[in-house]
Length: 382
Length: 169
Image 1 (cartoon, helix red, strand yellow):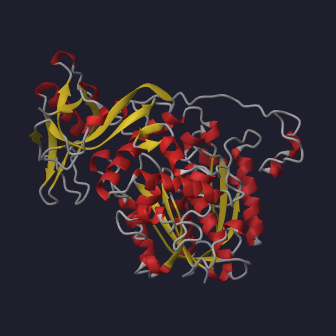
Image 2 (cartoon, chains in turn green, blue):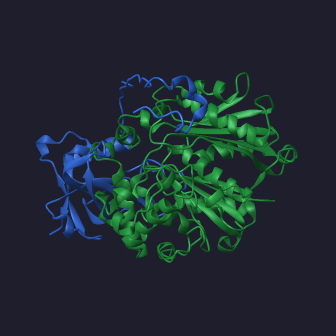
Image 3 (cartoon, one colour):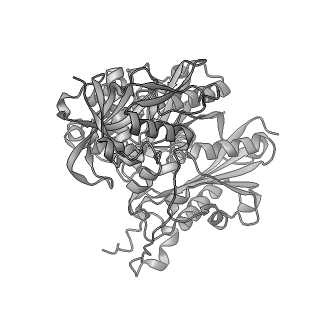
């Protein structure tokens, strides 16, 4: 049994809006090949495999049956988590902590370009009796949440727009970010409304992608070249009913980060977290999640962002990778892209996007509308 | 346009065999169909709404929570609430609202739809619904609203019996 668990290998394909030249299995093979090379392991050595996938995103039922070969997992223990990528990492962590496995691989991928009518997929996620008959695009849930968040916290629409400006600008320094750009806050505020007050440039664009992470016990990790240690992990779900949610608070992110902080022995996250990769599926979510994770007082994340404190060179760099706004929204694989970025930062491998003296890094993930499910991960370099 | 060979796309390991052809796609659908059930609580909610025009709720005294939509269990203490039915007037307040400019596929809609979450008075729940008879700019958070129900003869015991909510006069 291992008390400590490390991420020892990271492999990801560059997210992109279209990928007709590669099947999702080939993209996973690509990411896995990179991850195993990164960890200096072979697929023979891996004890257990976890994929994060959902049938309706794949267009096949029982999609987990299609997992093993592209990971080198044929004739090995495999399981699929139909949930947030962080929940897949949590299972890998548990397998290692419990002594069932020493070396575990987690895979997540997405190919939204294959989904002709994603609005239908989201609509099918709504309660069929009380919510779906409204027949409105599920972005409306984000519009409702954003409105109440702005109302309760006094956060301005300018501050939300500045998240887009920051993340897409930061993506320009990340060669794996297809949506980098110089988008001013006035560009954002002038973009067409989707579900007011939510605007089109505040919604992350889809990207196809695949990420593979290798996790190892302490003893096994010592034989890998670049381990980054998991200090704490958490995940939580709030009530699934629209009728029972808080609307302005990301309660799931407070609970998940609280669980991760407790495991990591972190009492004051503002002092102990050096940087963060935070879900920004919708721009306001970055602010809401920062406050939920205790990295900004309630209602202050917007002002911190406008003041530049969450830029790469600021006091608390947030989404130096560009986040989902800059790299693209990859469904449940988004969590793994965020984790991959934190790992690269802690190894000093982030190139032009590198943060000086990064310290411990935090990831906050969210499963998207209409869910109230998210995760948190604290990574440390020793 | 086919990329030139020196502008290798981003997944180089799988492209070498394909650089002469435009990849084909196979179109398909998942034509699955379902039946959904509202359950004992949902049936009671919709039948009462249809007959009497009021909302049925359940109440957990222990947690001081009133459920709308009603549930026969408490999500906090897990108590059985199947003997705790009450009725409440179909009035509430706009908790939050949004003006939806896209259709169900995310394309620009011909006309925007005003959607709100209405917290029903005397409950800890509410409904997502359309707001009626009001200009979007006039909607305010905490604005009192009342139910607009379909005429009795056209009610079918489903959510569509609720046309929306309007400003309470």
